[in-house]
Image (cartoon, rainbow, N blue to C red; front, side):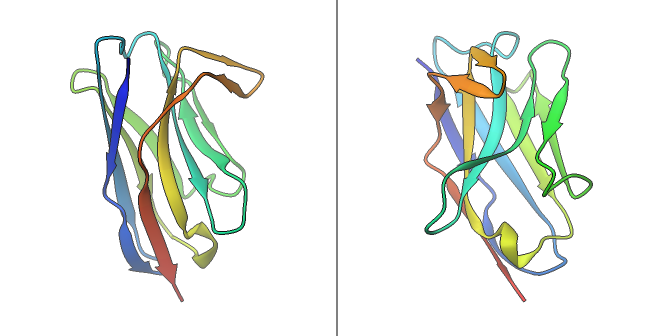
Length: 124
């Protein structure tokens, strides 16, 4: 079992920054085995992947919409995942979710664990 708890969301003006955090815990969790990622869902839209980090090598992935503005990182000693968001745009407004999966193939996350989400609102 894996539990994920996000924090750090809030309201910010366009051009501003926020840093999201996700605390992972549970008897089944191991930073060396789990792919970790951030997803977001805006009202009326499907959930979409934002950024991910591979276990072990720390390879990262970013959606084109956030490349150069968002940075995903991980503190494996503290079992924490971060998303530094800079130069935020109004279209970044969404509920942001932390996810963990032991298997990701061709971008498909198998049986992911999800956090409860943290709201990010960017105003113009």
